[in-house]
Length: 270
Ligand code: NAP
Image (cartoon, rainbow, N blue to C red; front, side, top):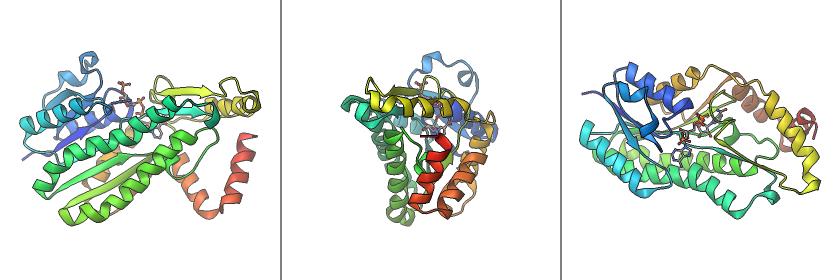
C-alpha cells in the first residue's frame, strides 16, 4: 500500500516543493491550500488530491482530512507547513495582528494536528512534521510575535512526543534558515514601528539586514529534510536546515544569553 502525506500551505514555497518530492517518491499526496482553484502545476499530477484547507477554518480542515482518508484510506504523515511572519516592534502591533499570527502559526497547526490524530491513533502509526524555523531556536530583533509562535511550536511538539510515541506516532520539527520562497513577500506582514519614532531607526536597520540576508534559492534542501524526517525511522526530533540555520543554532548553544544578545546587536547594528 502506498504511503499518504497531507501537507498544509502547499500553494508555494516549501509546501509545494515537498508535495512534488513526495509525489516523485511514489506517495499519495493530499496537497492542501487556501485557494486550490488557482493551482495548475500540482493539479496536473495523478495521486495528488488538491484540497481547500485554511488552517484557521475548522470546516475546511475537517473536510480536507475526511476527503483525503476517503480517497487514500489513511494518512501516514502530516506536514504542518502553513505559516507567515508578522514583524515589527511588539508595541506597534495591534491585538488583531498578534492574535492572527498565533491563529495561523500555532492554533492552526494544533487544529490540523487534532483533525489527523484520530486516524493515526487508529492506525497506531504516523509521523507529524511541524515546520518551525531557526527562529524557533534563536531570536532576531523586531520578530517577537513570529518567534513566540515558533518557540511555542517547538515546545508543543517536544512535549507531544510523550503522549504520542506510545501510540506509534512520531514527532519531528524542521527548522529552516532563510530561503527564497514567498515568505519574504506576500507571507510577510510588516507592521514595523507603526509611527512610534523611538523604534524607527533600529527597525530600519533590521529591515536593511533582512533585505541583505543571503536567502538560499535551494528550497529543495528543505523538502529533502522534510522527506528524511518522514522516512528515517529514528527518534531524532529537530532538523535544522540551511547553512545559516545550522550555524546559528550551534552559535546559540555555545553562548549564554548575554553573549548571544551582544553578538546579535553587533551584527544588526542595533
Ligand atoms: P510561502 O511560500 O509564503 O508559503 C507559505 C504557505 O503558507 C503558503 O502556501 C500560504 O498559503 C500558506 N498559508 C498562510 N496562511 C495560511 C492559512 N491561514 N491557511 C493555510 N495556509 C496558509 O513561505 P515558505 O517559506 O514556504 O513558508 C512555509 C513555512 O516555513 C512557514 O511556516 C514559515 O514560517 C517557515 N519558514 C520559512 C522560512 C523562509 O526563509 N522561507 C524560514 C524558516 C521557516 P497562500 O498561498 O494561501 O498564502
